[in-house]
Length: 389
Ligand SMILES: Cc1ncc(COP(=O)(O)O)c(C=O)c1O
Image 1 (tube, rainbow, N blue to C red):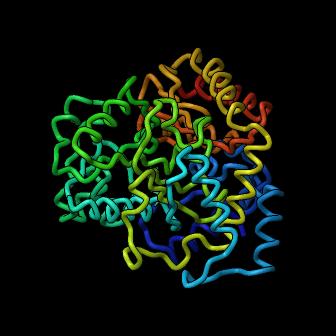
Image 2 (cartoon, rainbow, N blue to C red; image 1 turned 120 degrees about the vertical axis):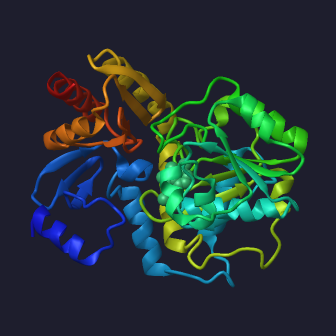
């Protein structure tokens, strides 16, 4: 079967909530993927910041194979070693021994969990940012600051106030002694890889501390090494109250975590929250293997170097106004609103990217992508811009 056949079958059998995919990916190894027509691509998007070690990485494959042959699932009436080991790793990575972890499957779910956790403070009000993306379930959609995604599903949670991302004055005005939580992405991913101004996170931290509101860092997209740091906020030096991670955490398998820091880790009591598949033995096996590989191979500093390399190669290309982001979460800002044409031209040349907004191309490849593959991408980008840009 070819891409066309799959597209027909897709539209005959799946809901139309996504744009109809033009290609069907059938296999991959590292950062290389193949579609149903046999065309080869360099995957510069990594399942949108999810395949942190690319496709079919031996460390992940072996860990998953070993685990599924041994024990595939346990209910949350029982413990199992992998969930404990992964929670230990995440607690260590936060640098706060008091931290505690709740596992789920997706970013939306752990942001939902954060809303529930914040209710345990006895408060209900939430401050979130315009343009942000926190998920599409009713609670997480209430946090998402994009009217187009929300409008058809009103009424949402009434207690959420959106303020412009990066505007500390407006945020400070909105945060008060009734605020349960403030949620922010350290870099806004879906909006087009938007980096906040210097000191923004520090000032949000100070305002939350002043009024006793929880500061929730949504590291669903920036987390697990994506920005060259484990969660994406560390450059600011702040200590959040809650961190949510998903996407890269399962190295391609569905896994998410809410990590509550300090005394906030004690807010949930038995019966307050749960998830059948959260912290499943197989998904946690994949995650442990991937995180250990990243640590053993010093991948975080590599991602920082990769950012500098790509920025130096791409920012000087005619038609590019800025290369922004951190590590391997990168927004290439174009002078003109032609990102979907550029994305299509790159796809035709064998590179998968995302047109995050009309003038921004987003890339979020595997953290272990090679220098040669990055070089090929930079060259192809230049060629595409000379035709399309
Ligand atoms: C910052 C952020 N939060 C939450 C989500 C929602 O994650 P999921 O699609 O796994 O529910 C996303 C997804 O793109 C995201 O980028």
